[in-house]
Amino acid sequence: MIRSLSHSISKIYKMMYNKDEGKGANKMDGRYDAVELAAKVISIVHDNGMYITNLQLQKVMYYIQGEFMKKFNYKAFVDPIECWPYGPVIKRVWRVYNSFGRKPINTGGSSLCLDVREESCIKKIIKEKLKMNVWDLVDQTHAELPWKHANEIENPFISDSDMEEYFCR
Image 1 (cartoon, one colour):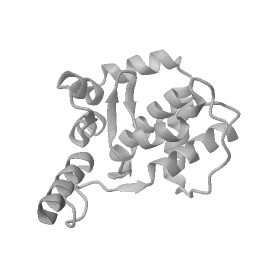
Image 2 (cartoon, helix red, strand yellow):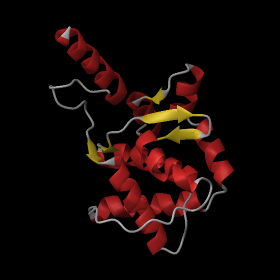
Image 3 (cartoon, one colour):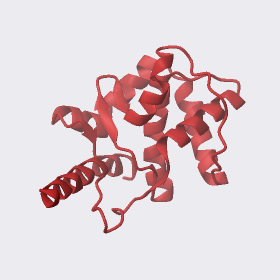
Image 4 (cartoon, helix red, strand yellow):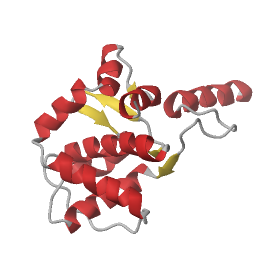
């Protein structure tokens, strides 16, 4: 019974994180904890005199993941990105900031240290995506391969391979 339970847990882990437990990561490890990175994004947003809602944060995190895969050949975070009706969502991050609803997130700062290239990449994404109307941002993610494919095949998760195909081509 314990062997069966262990095998089941291993299968779930592989499905959620696209990893083989005990054999290391697939070709792209996640560099940061998604919740810590989200807090850093919020801190950068506030430092630049802007605001961000949870819906916007989810989309920004999705684009950060794609750009990290493209520019640095590693994932920004290991958490799976889910295919929700309003676009890509990192569930752990969503849970942390869900209490804000549609209102801007007004939490404190972050002590996460990014290297200069990573922070520059994130700032560029923030400036570009937060200029957009939130519903245009949702529509943009809906038109892109990763969300579109997961939605078409009714997969609750956006695959790393679709992220790579879309962002790294």
